[in-house]
Amino acid sequence: MVDIRKVTVLGAGVLGSQIAYQSAFKGFEVTSYDVSEDALAAARDRFTKLAETYTREVPGADSSSVTAGIDRITLTSDLAAAVTDADLVIEAVPEILDLKREIYTKIGELAPESAIFATNSSTLLPSDLKDFTGRPERFLALHFANKVWQFNTAEVMGTADTDPAVYSAVVGFANDIGMVPIELHKEKAGYVLNSLLVPFLNAAVDLVAGGYADPEAVDRTWMVATGAPIGPCRIFDIIGFTTPYNIMSHGDAHAQELAAWLKENYIDKGKLGLASGEGFYRYPEDPSGD
Ligand code: NAD
Figure 1 (cartoon, rainbow, N blue to C red):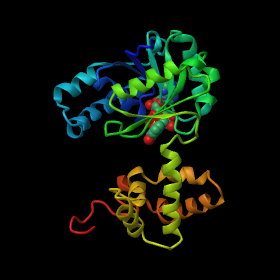
Figure 2 (cartoon, rainbow, N blue to C red):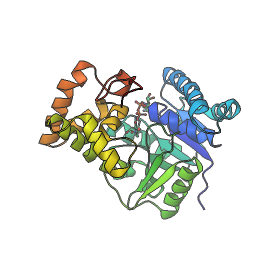
Figure 3 (tube, rainbow, N blue to C red):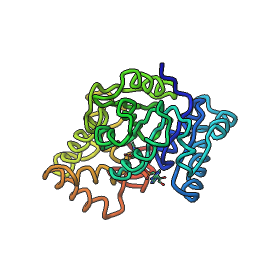
Figure 4 (cartoon, helix red, strand yellow):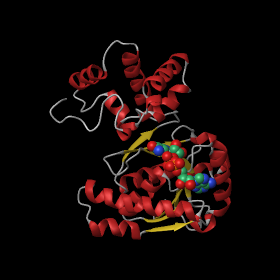
C-alpha cells in the first residue's frame, strides 16, 4: 500500500509554485523548497498571486479556501528538512541535466526510503535521472502543463524499473489534486502532449512562413474542420513564441529555417505572443472583429 499524504515540491518557480499550490489547495500538506531566501520571497509572491487567480478562475474557490491553500504550504530553503518526512517529492528545478542529477543524488540520501520521487521535466526522460535517485523503483515522471488550475493534464511516465504500485499511487495523487492523469505505458520524449503539439505547431508555422495561408485561415480551417475552439496560431500566441522557438532551433534543418523565420519576423520585433500584445494576432482584439 502506497500512501501519499505529505508532498514536497523542489523549486518554486513557474511550475513548482503551481504544483505546490494546487496540491495544497486540494488539501495536501505541502513543503515548498527553493535555494535561497530571495527565491522563497519570490515564491511567497507567486502563492499570493495564485490565490488571487484561483479566486477569479477556479469554480467554487473563495477567499477562505484559497487562504487555506496558502496555510497548508511550508516554505523552506533547508533541503534536508524539506524531504525528511515526504511521501512524494515532486522535482521542478530548472531543466539542466547536471543540476537535476545533483539534486537527486542529495535527496536520495536525505529522504526516507519510502519516499516517491517524481520529475516534472518536459524534455528529459526519467531514465536520464533514475540512477541518481537511489530508488529507481520509486521514481517516475509526473508532468504538469502550465496553468495547472485550469482543466489540465498530468502525464505519468515511468521507466522499466518503476514499481507498478508506485505508478498507480501517483496516478491516484494526480486525480486527487484535480488533474486528468494521462498514463504512458513506456517512455516517450515529449510525452503525449508535446508529441502531438510540436509537429502540429511546426506545420502551422510552415504554412504561414511559406506564404501558403494567413494565420486566420490556418486557424479557421482547424476550427471548422475539427470543432476545436482555437487553432494552432492562436495556441502559439498563448504559449508565447520563446519556447516553441527554442524547440524549433534544436530540430531538423527545416525546423531551424522556421525558427529563423520566427526570429526575423516576430521575436526580433518584440512580437512574442499574447503576453507581449502581439504575435500572430494583436491584443486586445477588436471585439467587433474575428
Ligand atoms: P523556473 O525557472 O520558473 O523555476 C525553477 C525554480 O527552481 C526557481 O525558483 C529556482 O530558484 C529553483 N532552483 C534553482 N536551482 C535549484 C536547486 N538546485 N534546487 C531547487 N530549486 C532550484 O522553471 P519552471 O518553468 O518552473 O520549470 C521547472 C521544471 O518544470 C523544468 O523541468 C521544466 O521542464 C518543467 N516544466 C515547465 C513548464 C513551463 O511551462 N514552464 C511546463 C511543464 C514542465
